[in-house]
Image (cartoon, rainbow, N blue to C red; front, top):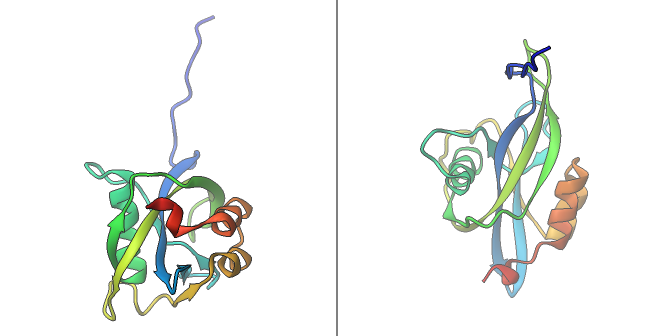
Length: 149
């Protein structure tokens, strides 16, 4: 009997890219979280892959759209986390999210999703207590911007 490979469907595991937006103030790291559009919980900006863009470029793009961040994304993946993306009219989608650091140079007042989200700076340890995903919380807990230099 020949082996068959199942055809991937949109409901199968999907990949997203996320921005861990950070700055250093008085020698201490701070990270920027945004609220999700639907539940209002604290998250890192994230989105789907796009053809012709690297994961770090996509993380920077999402940081701009969701948080108004202009800065420099690193190609160094800090880690990954998983979550279930809840959709309105479709089945929920399991996602794996690769996280890339984005050093914040500037925060814009006017950005694409400004009316849909809040943004706030936290210490990494405090940010870890605000997010729901355990793997992301561990990444935030251990994050030190000085180690990226």
